[in-house]
Image (cartoon, rainbow, N blue to C red; front, side, top):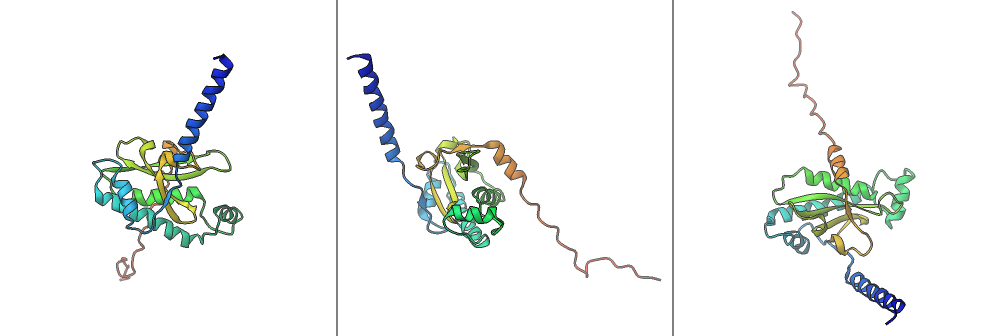
Length: 203
């Protein structure tokens, strides 16, 4: 077999393997409720040490965050149209990174013993950049995690393995995650009631 034939053969073989791998990738699945057993089960199955109650809490927070923001930002369809409305000042929010920020803030408000969260990005520094939150077991590799994406379908949560998303190639950005956590809004101080305020009495 000549060298040129060998090269052609191996190129075809590699292309076939690549096509098979891509064919195995599936679109992320929709979560159907805040107590979706599929979503809870996927998180619980990340590692044997996962606390099922923590898996339940993540599922609830991720699902309700998308629904809440869909109402708050009056999401339009498709997401590209909504991005245009935000960028032209016709909507107050609803870009992908804003969905990811809000979800991370809500998750960070809770205590977690068996789970942790990561900032994920794809097509970074391009017009097609997308950001989501990834959940893993504590200490688990980012690429073994599950994406939690509320932006892709305008507030409807979808989830799936990091490496199986046919539309995006996800990478972790640890500095951005910490930056977002540092941006968590401080709670507003509670104003003093008139009855509790000290008053001066002239003598």
